Image 1: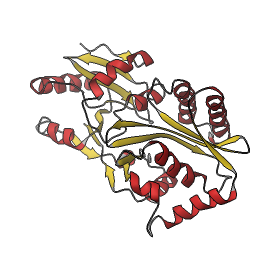
Image 2: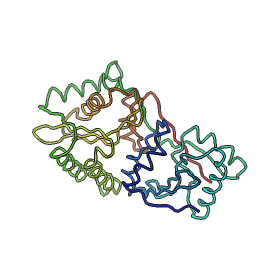
Image 3: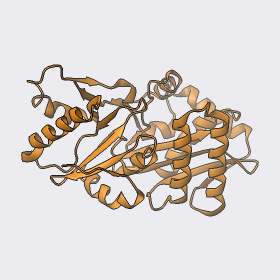
Image 4: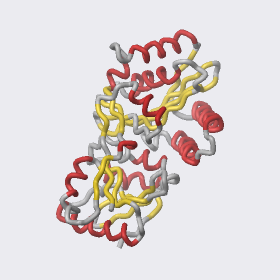
Amino acid sequence: MMDFKKLTLEDKQLFNKYLNPYKFLSCEYSFTTLYIWKDACDIQYAIYKESLIIKKKDFEGNYYFMQPLGYKEEDLKELLKCLSQYQKENNMKYIFKDLEEDFAEKIRSFYKEEQNVYIKEDRDNFDYLYEADKLIKLSGKKLHGKKNHYNSFVKNYDYEVKEIIDGKITDDVINAAEKWFRENNNNDKMLYYETAAIKEIVQNINLFNLKGIAVYVDNQVVAFSLGEKLNDKLAVIHIEKGDMNYRGVYSFINKTFIDMCFSDVKIINREQDLGIEGLRKAKLSYYPFKLEKKFILSY
């Protein structure tokens, strides 16, 4: 029987034990990602047959399992049966979401005899992967417009870039996050949860092993970004906020953050677009070299 518990900060060491052996390209399998959305997605976990089982709900309120971590191959079939049974008994719409392609293919054969089971791509949750070097240099015709926006910010504003460590910078970033929320929330519950999480992770930035920068103009934070290295070749940008009244602010912080903090990795994951048209257009405009697919398995 699986006994699910709510995710807390005290679970970080346990989760890292299960997460660290994997070299995921997806942003989903990061303790920081899970922690940011722990309340919005009601993230819970259980240890079953020495495997980490994560249960969460999507932004439409549908519960599902992420792919199990740390399982033994000989236990996988029994594990899948148990999760399928739990899904039926609890009327979960999905068995799995956030599946990596390799795992989806691995378990396809297990469900092939089940009627009305399907595995499909979850396009709105594909992660955008970029070459770090290209985001830093902004060279070439395709990124010429981004380079112009970056240069416009540099030319027109007397700015200062500070690494988020603690003290006043932390307070300034929290104030900027609250201001951004007030101006953009439109009663959006997810932005409320995200803003609350930003406050907590900024205050515990070293505990989360995060990097962050804040961009000041006239002693006010006009942009900030937070991210982490998941492994030697990949960094994830978890948070990026900017004041659109400052022309070129997003091009500036995008390039500057990677140059300052993640120039030693090859790949930058800028997470998904959630099916939001404007966000998809913005992410595609940086020309990702790959969309990291995620899959859904359901009846």
